[in-house]
Length: 168
Image (cartoon, rainbow, N blue to C red; front, side, top):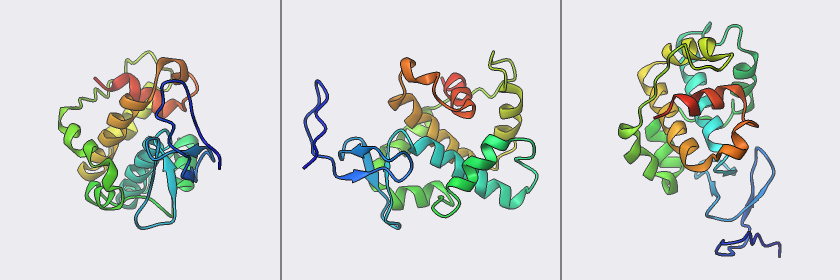
């Protein structure tokens, strides 16, 4: 049996392979969706939550992602397994319920002057999301702040770098 034993880790056995990035995960670093046969690691969950927000908002505003190829590709990647609402996310991923308790404490400043080159365009997209979709983005921000470290931030797609910079 394959085991993941990084230094300082409890040594849990890998129980699944992330359906997005194909990494082996233990139960501390990945979760199984209750409605789909999908196992997803915690690093791939923020993009899925953002994709869910974009997909549900795009149903009401088909021009939301116009000019954003990276966001359109993200939405397309999760087109079959997205969450319609934060409530559905909680029902399908109950092990991540702690996110919903911290969403109210999360402040996202979607300003244009982020220093990031694409800050203006991402600010416009996030600002145009409906309220329910905005909750999914805030959940993604909470999880991103807990899982990302500075060493791996420069490898994140632009929309996640923007969200990380904007989250207080």
